[in-house]
Image (cartoon, rainbow, N blue to C red; front, side, top):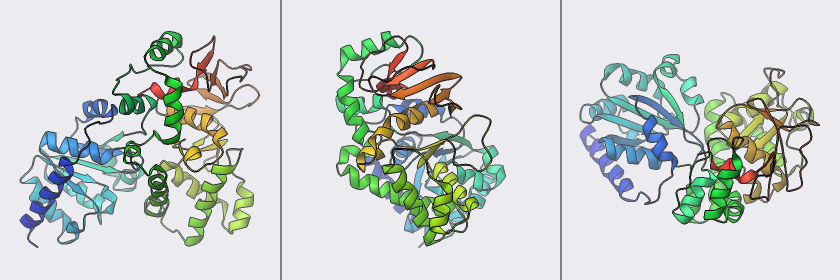
Length: 388
């Protein structure tokens, strides 16, 4: 097939996708668009959070050609030749799921150098993809993350209300919470959100099946790209880790036991854990300044706290997982050295997390579930969902 024929088919496919874009779009897109100023950008984030939707919007707005990296059309000819043809006729190119392309890093570097006045925006599920490529690329490309949906965004999808964003839950939380609770029954929406609200595809139905698909693609497609040698036994190890984290009351794993049971060495297990973290499947919470280079950390949670509810797991871990997920988008969060004093340290603030009756201990703030308004130094858990 001739290059211009392939470009024409890609144009038709892009326009078809654009015609089916949803009317309601994530509030985060407005902030994201303001950051898309560089001609070389890697957009990354978990599967199903809206990266493709955003890139199609940007393709239409800037007259760029959107190309899905896994499109079979791309195997018809040299992708470099195809991209050259595109860049000679468009202001730029958007390559979604770039790692599907063979030798993508070499191709992207060559395009970047050969077309200094053209836009090259790429996307993938992990920022590690860029770091794994040619070192020069990580210096040239700006990396921007699209996180999971916030509670604030979920409320917008459900009601159409654009509620004020919370700057910090630790500064004058009462006035903010009172304003929100006057407008909506926030606890009711938070209960729904924790079961389905972190990814916009919940609107399409079959949420559990879609989340299972996200989990399987992350393990079987994304992780093998980042781990050079991986076997069926290693997939078994990762499935065991997922299962244990789902159903264990204690959010961690026993490294020695797992290595013995699955017949693998500690370095490999730590590599798998680290990669599961890099593809946004889990959050490993470490203790500040005392962790070894290879470690399972102090606590391990799913990066998407909805997993605990979707797969009927240990929902008691949702609170801490949600705290880690939200605050990690805003700064560094560590596990406290002494659990008798606090659960986490965030920007020097000691935090305890729990239910309605959770005591403060000796921490600065206690984050409580099932309360709607702050009380002294007790902050409602739902407020962490209003940070973006």
